[in-house]
Length: 373
Image (cartoon, rainbow, N blue to C red; front, top):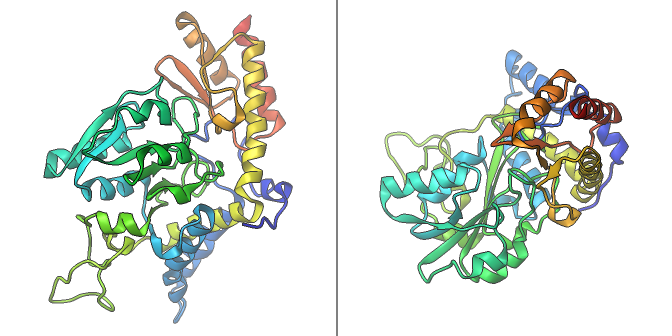
C-alpha cells in the first residue's frame, strides 16, 4: 500500500476536544466522515431521479476500502453493522471445538456460548491465558485433535497487548484462525492475510461512527462456515427474490441478513480511504510515540503500568493500576481536569490516537499532579 497523504494533512481533519483519551471505547469522527454523511443524507433527502444509484455504489466501495487495509480480495469482504454480529455469523456457522479465552472481550465468548447453546454443533474450549494474553507458547499445549478453530483478539482490550498472529498461525496449523480486530484495526499494521476470518467494527480507531464494520473470510473459511443467518439479500437471484426462498449464495456474500445501510457504508469507506492514504504503518508509529509519552508520565507519578512496554507488543492502550485505595482519587482527578478515560476492574485505561494533541497531554499531566498531592 502506498501512502499518498502526509500525516499532518491527515491529522488536520480531526477536531476532537482536548482531553479525550478513550479511543479504545469510541473514536470521535473527523470532518471528512462528517461531511460524507451529510452529503449522503442530502442526497437521500432530495432523492432526485437517478441519484439513488450513488447509495447502491457504497457496497462495492466499502469492500474495496476494507480490502485495501487488510490485504484480502474485495470479493472476500462483506459489510457488517458491528463486530459482534460478524462474530455471531462465524460462531453459529462452525462445527467442532473452538479455542477462545474467557478473558477476551465478551463478543467472542458470548457468540460461541450462544451458538453452542442454540445448535450444539460447536463447543468452546476455554483457554488459560497469561494475564489475558494469548501467545503461541501458552496456546500450543491447550489445543486438541477436536479443535477446529482458534479465536483471538488482535489487541487485548484490558492491556493493549498485540497478539502474535504469525506465531499463532504456525502453532495452530490448518485450523481456522479467527481474529476480532476491532481494538487494532486501523492502527496496527498486522499480517491479516495469515487469518481465515477477520472481523471488526469502525467506531473506535477508524473513527467512522457506530453501525460500521466488516466480515472477511478466506476461501477456506467460506467453505467451512454454514451461513445460518442468511437473508433475502444474500442469494444469487437478480433483484429481490419473490415467491420463493432460494439457497444462500456461495462465499462471504451469504453472511448478510438484509440490505446494508449505505450511509454507514459511506462513512466507513471514507474513513478507511483516509487511513490508506496516510498508511497504517505511519499511524502506528505516531501512536507508539503517544503511548510511550503516557507510560513515561505514569512512571513519573509512580503509577503501575500493566500494559506492555515494548512498542512491538503494545497498540494504542496504556492501562495503569493505582493502589486500590487511590483509584477513586485518580478517576476523580482525571474527571475534574476534563480527561476522558475508561475505568474498569480497578484499573484506568488511557487510549490516545496518533492525532492526540499536546493540550491533551498537558491536561493529563495536570490531573496527575493534582492526584499526587
